[in-house]
Amino acid sequence: MNSIDTVVFDVGNVLLDWNPRHLYRTLFDDAAEMERFLSEICTPDWNLQQDLGRSWREATEVLIQRHPDKAPLIRAFDERWEETVAGPIEGSVALLRTLHAHGTPLYAITNFSDEKFPLVTARYDFFACFEGIVVSGTERTVKPAADIFHIFLERSGRAAAQCLFIDDSELNIAGAQAVGLATHHFRSPDLLRQDLAERGFPVPDRP
Image (cartoon, rainbow, N blue to C red):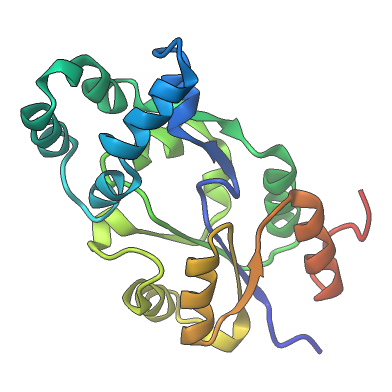
């Protein structure tokens, strides 16, 4: 019998198609300029601080002080944040719903701003499938740190050996493995479906 009976999802780029480029392609005519802006000003490290609990007001003020000429573009990340989400990754959401319909215990661990997370939970009903969700911005710790996985295990009452953790980040996968969770490095819904089926979860073994 499969000892892994619980599935733990990441959210961004596993269940939701999140990318700041979805927004900034509408604000830049030049792709190279957009990439420069996202690598030098509104950087991934800057955004990670919001996932750690920094307020968006503080985050934008910090950057505007450094780059006053880019103030409208910086504010857009906050004010038009919902446009960074293109929508659900339908194949993954279908798997989530199938698992839920069969009574599989489902959880999520996500690096996400606690200010922005309610925007997606209000918009997408599949979040109701989860028995619990650990949000980094609320906990003030992010994947791949061991702390966030221990928070999940303590709160859910699950043992690490019971859980399959799904994430698109190799660093986060390594963090979960270090705590003892089984893992699936997400690349596509079809590969996820195959892995779940091979592990004995109640999903179709083919599309």
